[in-house]
Image (tube, rainbow, N blue to C red; front, side, top):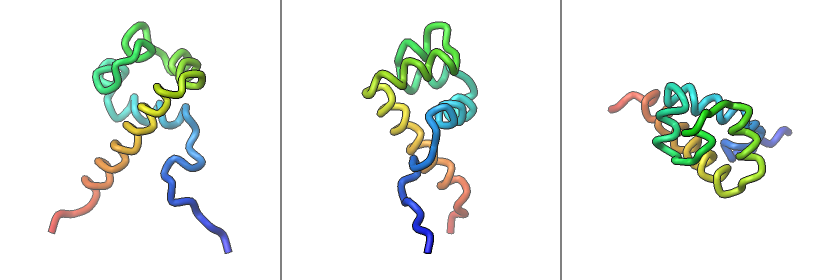
Amino acid sequence: MEQHSKDPLHGKRLDTILEELVDYYEGFEKLGEQINIKCFTDNPSIKSSLKFLRKTDWARTKVESLYLYVLRQKKKRQTPQQ
């Protein structure tokens, strides 16, 4: 019997998380408004942001927290209101 993790971050790659956030916020400008870190506000790119996030635990934690928030928002929108 296969067990599945209940952790929504389980098996998610950081690059996938970052790309989904950039898509959700329609670019780095609005993402930088949500998380004010230089890799999102000063000449941002996926590559440079990943490099920073992989070596900076506090920033990665903020990105993962925002990603979990976005997942909850998407789920709320999909669930019909009764």
